[in-house]
Length: 108
Image (cartoon, rainbow, N blue to C red; front, side, top):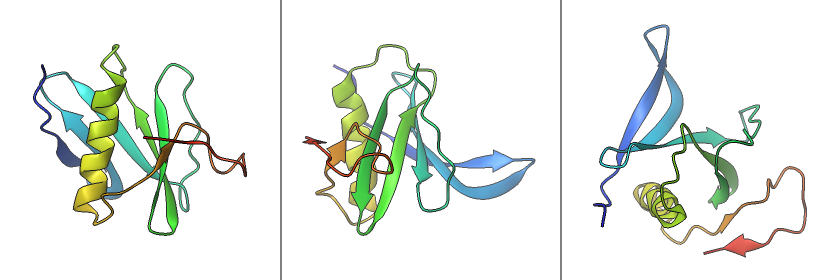
């Protein structure tokens, strides 16, 4: 079984740190980009896996990059780890974009 050790890393554009971040699971190569929907023009990539969660009162999109059939449970563990360091360990996740649907079905 893969160790569930993630790193939270900043995204750099032109050598300048931005507010964008991503999670990295080094053993599996899983990368999960983090998009705060309040300030991001996020568009889901159909070739990747997306989850959406609410951190306090803000919706956040989580999308894999370079998805290579890593277990969905590993993606969810990474998101929950991130939510825990943001002081919101009980984050509820959905696979439906909250900007387009008012009736969300949460997954755990």
